[in-house]
Amino acid sequence: MRPNVGLVCRERGIASPARRYRYGLTAHGSWLLAALSVSLFASPSPANAQDSLPPHSPPADTVGTLNLFLDCRAPGCDFNYLRTQLTWVNYVRDRTAAQVHVIVTALGTGSGGNQISLEFIGSREFAGVDDEVKYDTPNGASGDELRTELSRVLKVGLARYVLRTRFGRNLVVSYLATRGGAAPSRTAKDPWDYWVFSVGFSGSLNGQSQSNSRSGSGSFYASRTTAAWKFRANLSGSTSRSSYQLDDTTNFIARVHSYSGGLIQVRSINDHLSLGASASVTSSSQQNIDLSLRVAPTLEFDFFKYDQYARRRLVASYSVGLDHYAYTDTTIYNRIKETRMDHQLGLSYAATQPWGSASAAISASSYLSDFGQNRLSLYTNLSLRVARGLQLSYGLSYSRVRDQLSLAKAAASDADILLQLRQLATSYTYGGYLSLSYTFGSLFNNVVNPRMGF
Image (tube, rainbow, N blue to C red):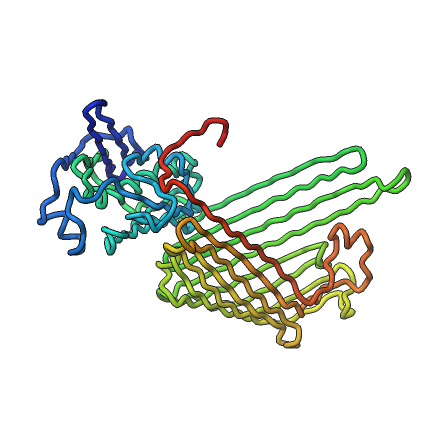
């Protein structure tokens, strides 16, 4: 069991009784045996807290209630809950008004849980006072467990900033030791040897007098992740049947299925380089494919270190693959089956920063037997805080398509086209969105009122 750390923040008033806000790390809360408390009711001395802050950091009692901008993109980001738990800070809607900007991101772990990262970025009086805290959440953790743990870590991380405000004298730090007084060993024996499995099924049914449809899907997932190796395997599939009564004598039935699976084994070479091998299998009625199989070794290089992946990454990858296709109907190239080799090159960038987030990717592939049969894809996404209250978001994608080997030779019927039962010939695909929003008024967002559902 791990040590428990708690914070207490007291606000005193003349006309009203003191309000006490307390929390603890209570993943195993009932095991409390001892407590160590340190109360801070005066300004910190230069010999302790101030030495860890930059020379231009403000002295105690010069900063009011801490203004916090919370940029949360991880499990447990329940803003209403957090506002009720951290009542001793001001939540502001714009990062330019904040004294502390906290960016919360998540990365999946080998156990099926997440590694949550909180980056504390000081601004204004706290410029240069930055910090980063990481913790792991288990697979299957409930929503309440996730938000409780996020609240706990956020409180502890904000303590160093609150200590430098005029309310720092009301801050109390508690250490709650567990049975035995020691944290668990991180090298404890794992009976599953890092293996994680997941199985899921779903189905739906709907209809009316003139039409009805039913569908089902299933999935299987297995993984094993260590510092040196990473393994993933997955299977998924879906099938649907729709019936349409066109007139008194004509009933049209549409059937669609799609099945896919894949596995990948990756070896970590160093902080930037990985080497892996992958295999994938597909069957799709829409794409005229009874069976598609690809096996390929892959080389990946991250220009930043992998431990920075949650905040920024620039990844290049290259693979050479062997492909085998078995088609449902004869293709436009008069093939019912064939085997090809291809190669794929990709470059992607993503960043999560105080000004927002951005990502972009470009990938190119072609068959080695005919470089004219290729595909080039571009994608970009941006969410930008332009100015106070003004946010711009957009996403664009485009693919130049020259590699539709599986197109059926037979002409598509009107029903195939309207119901999208068949893949159609095209030379490109595209998509995009744009949004612009402006919010003005009070900067503060501290009050929670759940009445009437909003």
